[in-house]
Length: 283
Image 1 (tube, rainbow, N blue to C red):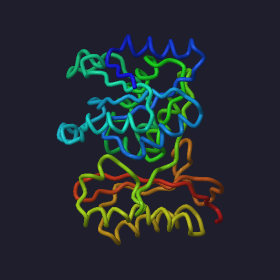
Image 2: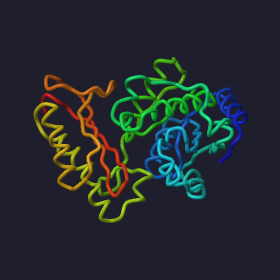
Image 3: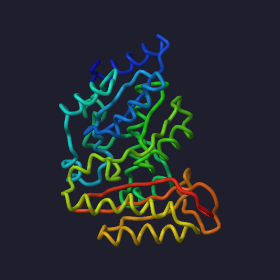
Image 4: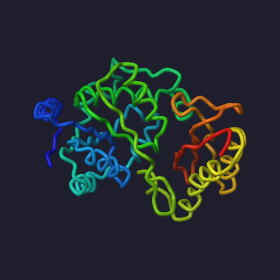
């Protein structure tokens, strides 16, 4: 496995792969790798792509310096996971290389408009502009490629798809299904901060999605089930909603067809997200 930290070397390597006829797959991560990330690598390898996995904790998308400091950094573990999962190139750019002016703000940013102001964006203003900015830079460095993202951070996936669509970037965005632990909890680097009791309470997120999916009736009925299930387990509700899977705008009770249920909750100070597809206007 090749390891790269230099941005010019990153660009050159990706260009060489394409020149040889290979399809480049980019798996962008912030490290603390787990089976969810491995599933993205596996999906890329299944399509015959050459996998470049990037590890970069982007400080621009943290509005809380404490949260940035607490974010898990596990370089030795990440190296072992990347090797075991068949990553072809591990890219670990430095903060100075990515944002030379940091902590001063970078002069050029990408704004994603109303989509970035919903849900997570309402609670963390500017977060998705920061995500869009760093992802656009990752895409610029990698060049034409397939980029693999997990559906666990569904709003992030929607934002990335919008950026690629609006800016006509030569990137195919591939969304991969949420990976869950045996107990149903969506895999996340933040899960390691939960105690055993906290993890038990956190299972209410996946349980809420299952109840909402299996229910009948309009979107408002599903929203009520989502909230009720979280509150029953003493999960602090961030938000619950049933939305259009592309725009993330709330479905009204006249909506019919495929939708997305979104839930966010806080357990033991840890913010957890989950989501699932469902059908409204029937089963």
